[in-house]
View 1 (cartoon, rainbow, N blue to C red):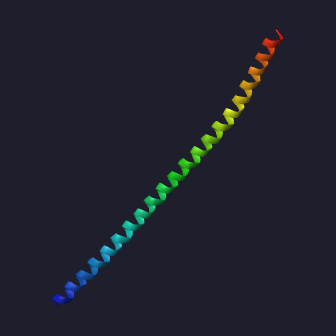
View 2 (cartoon, rainbow, N blue to C red; view 1 turned 90 degrees about the horizontal axis):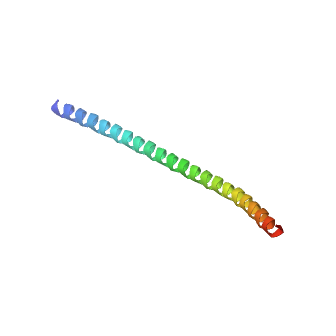
View 3 (cartoon, rainbow, N blue to C red; view 1 turned 90 degrees about the vertical axis):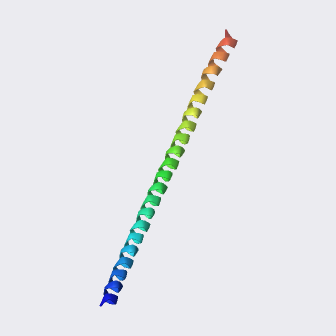
Length: 78
C-alpha cells in the first residue's frame, strides 16, 4: 500500500516537473522571438533613417552646389 502511494506521488511529481519544464521552454522561446522581433525592427528603423539621411544629403548637396554656382557666376559677371 505504501509503495503504491510513493509511486503515485513520484509519478505526479515527475509530471509536474515535466509541465514546468515545458512551460519554461515556451517562455524562453517567446522571449527569444520577442527579442529577435525588436532587433529586426531596430535594424529596419536604422536602414530607413540612413536612406532618408542620404536622400536629404543628396538634395541639400545639389541645392548648395546650385546656390554656390549661382553666387560664383554672379561674382564673376559682376
